[in-house]
Image 1 (cartoon, rainbow, N blue to C red):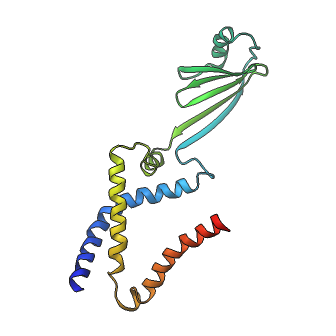
Image 2: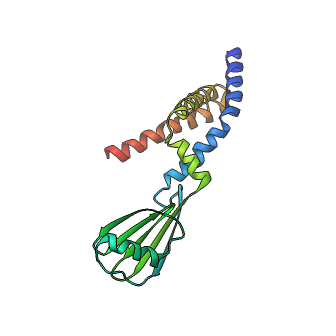
Image 3: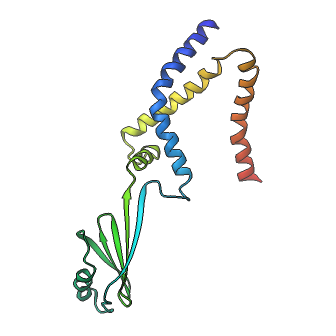
Length: 185
């Protein structure tokens, strides 16, 4: 058993150091993803409202150059769409203009990637697939090894026979209790 504990300690120590960076990426991104209903971790969004002289509701091809001239977008227009009879949308890099053709109200909505969070969420959610799938699977395997080797590192009243066993049991029961309450009650 002494040799087994020594192997567990070696694995736990070395794989633990290897896992630090990935654990931080998944931990920080996990908190951000869990609170997506409070804020958008991927994009910083902005809204600006201003008025132009109304262009009326004529044919889109006739209105488009007039509206563009009055809105004076700072960026090149990538596309446009007549959402409704009185709403024309202009799309630019990182934003869009919603123009009310009858009132002249323009709502300019912008979005910009939150560099650190966007990249971490990209990895956490495995958006890119390919090589990252293998890295994520290897990390999951490392976490399993860390969990299993950690069980045998501490002996006595702080280990499995005492506080460690209680905490490990709690770690098993929390997800079970949650799933029973959430799905079956």
